[in-house]
Every structure is written in C-alpha cells, then in structure tokens.
Image (cartoon, rainbow, N blue to C red):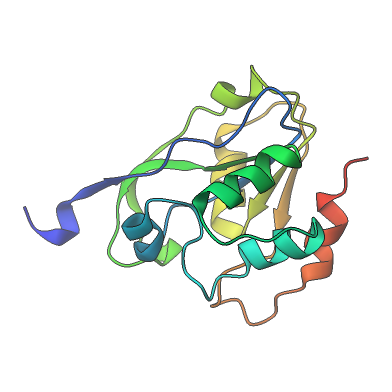
Amino acid sequence: MQQGNRVFCGFEPVFDENSKILILGSFPSVKSREENFYYANKQNRFWKILAEFYNSEVTDIDSKKRLCYGNNIALWDIVESCQIKGSMDTDIKNYVLVDLSVILKKARITKILCNGTKSYELTKSCYNGTVPVLKMPSTSPANVSFNKEIWFDNLRLD
C-alpha cells in the first residue's frame, strides 16, 4: 500500500469521571504517532503551557497523564482515523470523527477547548450540544502568533 493511501488511527482519550475541560486536537503529528502519545513534538507548546499553568513538571507520558487527571483535563483528538502525509492539518484526508459521547456521557465536561482551527471546525461540524466549544490558538510551532494568555484564561474552571 502506498504511504498516501494508508489509514492512520488516533489515540484513546485520556479522561475520567472527574474531567471537566475537554481539550481536542485535530490528529496526532508524525512525532506523536511515533511516540504513541499526544503532542510529542518538543516544539509544540501544548505541554509547556499546561505545565506552566498548573505548576507541574512533565517529563514523560505518565507525568503528562497525571497532569491531566490531577487537573480535571480530558484529552483527545477529533479525528479518529484518516489518511495523512506528514503532520499538517491541511493534509488530513478521508477522515472519520470520534464519538464525543464517549467522554460526554461519563464526565461532567463544562467546556471544550479546540486546539486550533481544524479541530474547532470539525468539532462544530459534528457536535451541537450545550457544552461551549471554544477555538483556541494552535499550540503548533507553525502558529507564529500564539498567545498563551488565551489558554490560561480558558484553563480556569469557573
């Protein structure tokens, strides 16, 4: 099978019944797929932002999961599977979206933070519930106009 025709699958969600904020990315990058966990590219700001906001240290997958569980964060990607070359959202083709009810039926999610435009657009295309869906600045290194204060404002539980 040619690389361009291969279907890649995303990761299982990280959440429990105490999760209150659902953070949705679009689809794992090449580096994340290699490491088998979310936001593995060291240039991505995601874990740096969460570590700073929650005053936590993240050094490995277990510490990242502890940060999420300890701060009521659920983590997932809106695309369950797709064809993709590389890591860019624009390269996501022939995708299948996740079933958000997997988390929403088990946790008391109060807001959904979409990491970037693609995640936001895809989430809005499949979810019409009452939980607010917010478009966050992408933590990708490709986003040169990143503003961490927007993330900090929205990571607060009201």
